[in-house]
Picture 1: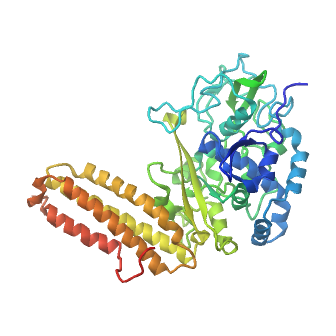
Picture 2: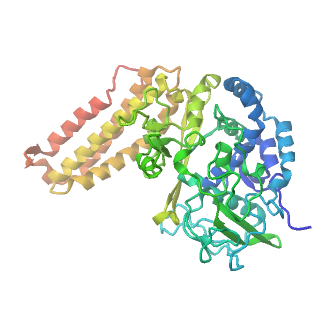
Picture 3: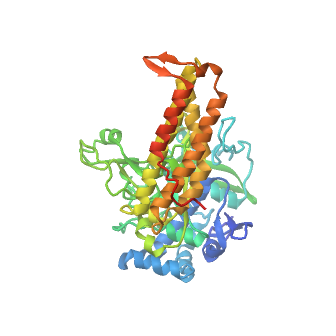
Length: 537
């Protein structure tokens, strides 16, 4: 009997229990113990996201019939209040597809191509091929390029990650692939998940996280199936499916690479990674639920869509805290429309839209919205940075027409303008002291958001559908005023004595005293705190 490692039965998913312990579990155990598992906690946030999507693909299929026949909110409510997942149903599904989850099956190895071979007959070492490596000196992550072997469970995690996030560039030329030219596989793009400004909802345990992110489309295409339910991959592109994913299950498990893990004894020591199936990235709005979207005129021209609006995933800006862009992620009752074609400029992530519809079922709960993203290097042919962030909020904030969302949008707008007032003060002081305005403004703006960060994260859960919005907003205005006033004082303390003198710059009178007075006036306009209102406890 050949080497075998079945992901349904054998441990490979790194988790953190609700008691704080780290363990490695199988797919079956992840579902069976989901109420006792806090979260997936593997090697990288991107790996956790990719593994979560594998578990979601299974759950989507198990729940498919009830989702098609019942009211979605009632179905969710029943599952949520049951206190557990339907383990018997999940086990029946896993048993039916058990053979397709073997990492080294001779005909259909999990997410790989059986018998895959390079045109040279050689395979490659693991480091820098299967495992991401970031070349930057200050990188968030750096995985060694000198990795010589991986145990089977670890290799499985990196296999899933590679299919989700692999960088672009020339790959190993694969024997039997007509696209191989001169012993090389030429670029077809990064892994689909790498395009996303990835988002997922996190509950108090894995059971809640899975249910919160179960967000099937209303018109779920019957042809949409996970990779393990399709015909085994071959070295050549799949003619049966063409190039179009049919829905979320295709995208959760899409084989952007043709891969073969090569076991040696009790470990994987070599790997082949060739080009697989490209995803038509501008056509996935209705298929991908775990990212926000932006209208892309560039893709409309490139794809010759003839007026059909095309949308690209809205990527995260890793230089900004997630809360600063929260307004763009939430469902909007009146989204801005492109005046030329009459279509919305953006769409929210489906999981957040679904959360808003479920908010009445979850009136007393708080959940985390977690962001995950990758910044690739030049030509997307290497990894640059991997980053993640999270905010805790009430589900009512995701109700498009709700007061909670409106309050958040207003606060974020006012906070942006208040920080801009601080930046303007820094710029004036720089000019008054004989320096440059722009660098000073940039530093002050970054500092302003940095000092507000922890306070905003603490304040955000106060915004609920049943809160007193006047009091809650007034609380933030007080906090913002106090924090930014302290920063303004610090800028004055650091300013040179020359700033006290009055200067005329471009016809404008500038001095420290005048600038700080304008700052206090403007910041109070933007953050209209009322002293007679209830103080934040």
